[in-house]
Length: 73
Image (cartoon, rainbow, N blue to C red; front, side):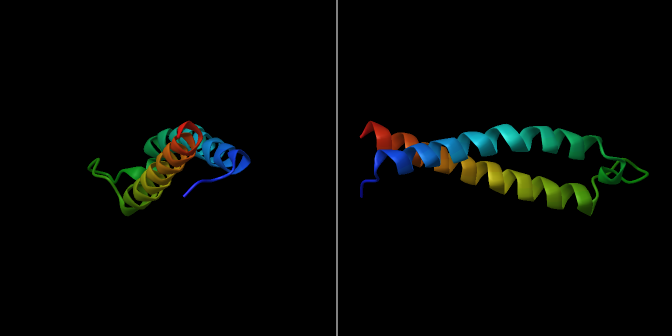
């Protein structure tokens, strides 16, 4: 399957955007007082956000790779 160059560039842009936007949000989640309970254990708030952000970043990386591979060959 081949994609037109503009579509490959959109995939690359989307992947880069995802990888730039989510890490700062994850750092804020880790610093949020709702992330740890009184004993310092991770709460459901932290676990859910960590999974959502991780999934988004994995999909963003996959999108970036697909876009780059489409442009290269």
